[in-house]
Length: 228
Image 1: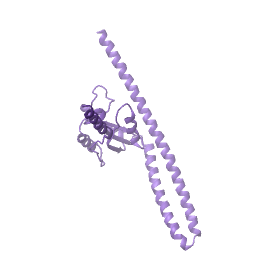
Image 2 (image 1 turned 90 degrees about the vertical axis):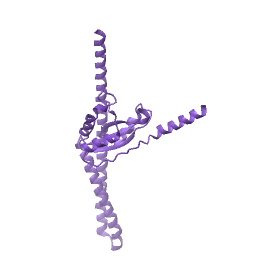
Image 3 (image 1 turned 180 degrees about the horizontal axis):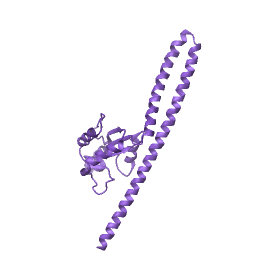
Image 4 (image 1 turned 30 degrees about the vertical axis):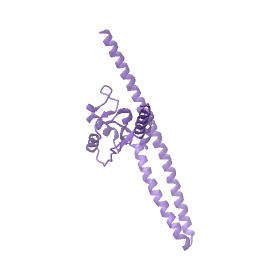
């Protein structure tokens, strides 16, 4: 009985430790996302100011130009106005992401060299550049980089991620720790769940390139042939 209680205590302590680590990781990820969004906001506001000033200057030039110059100046003005409109749209997107804390990306990734076939990690990030998060995961104690099968933008990314996790609870690789996001499931089943819970078109990449892994297999086979 005493050994059982000690085991239970140690297990509980480990679970609490892992939970704290997960909370800290989420906080770090959120801080990175906010920093990235604020930086993007500053950049796009600076660009908007630049184009407004450039358009104002171009209009001043037009008011004093002759007929020969006007055609070229008008073409430049139209291009500046187009760039300004594009910048305004980018600004709206960034401001929306800053204000809507639930907007983000749900990613479907695999790493067959590390975890085998039909094992997928399903997670989410608020990063403006979601691939930065995937690259970080590939740098963290796994021998090969992750391959992306889908990157899904959602106005409520946590709900979409949770709906997929809940539906695939019985397919979890780690059935003890709920914070692990790896599932043994076919990509088609994941795609069906995404379509069921997300009302926008999403493109899935079926084949995992896994270049480093496949090249490593080839090199290993060549080595075995040489020594046989």
